Length: 336
Image (cartoon, rainbow, N blue to C red; front, side, top):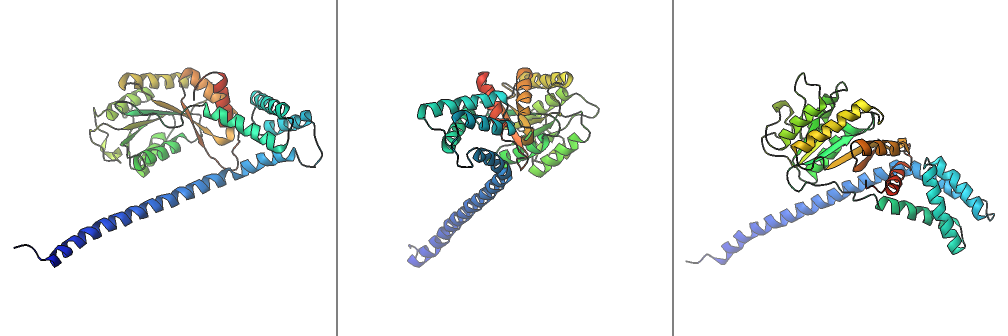
């Protein structure tokens, strides 16, 4: 006997309600994510506002007063503004050359012309810096080596990066505590791993070698051994990981001993995981300005640097660091 039509409608209705509710929940999720992203962007923009306003004020001051200025007078004032922003002599010369060429070609050198030439030069250098996306290994775990001087924010950056890789990219993430020099460095990284809900590998008791800690981390990342239970904040287990993020001790670029140790960590990772490290991120404080060039150039030579992670983007940030590094790499025919 066929079912009554009324019973058919009663059965179909809950199924329809289920899909409608699922659709509503997804819409709410998308709206909430968009709201959070907008808040983050607003906070980021606000943090840079003081630096932006100061730099633009210096540029605008070149054309204040209404009196017409010659090209040489304008370039002299622009040179002062760029040097005050810690752009550096070589970079300033390159920008001034572009502005002079554009002005002589068009016969004008107003504020709009200078700003357009400056933006064009900066954008071109940044675009030649290479792909901004993190690298991804073709097979096996992707290894990200994080380096930088003391106090730049490496450990905090690793914690935030691990959280985003897990929550936004759905990656199984492992972090490695290879800073065996600084007191409490392992505990600090473990706390960040706990907040991000990812596993962390710590050096064996009595082991002070950073490369030995990296060797152990590579074994865990490949699924050859499991992370210790107290540090299995992401669930642990013997399954291979998608991403391994390696913390290193803070060092100055001219510290030969620690730089040699960093190179040894790199060699250890290369032997354990094909193609590792796939990214080497140099963490720099936005307030260091052109000093980032010296750091990038030094570690590019000895270890290899593939990208910059810029921290502390607030009112103290100097607008010169990233651009100067990109322009230096362009002149040296390197990609960063």
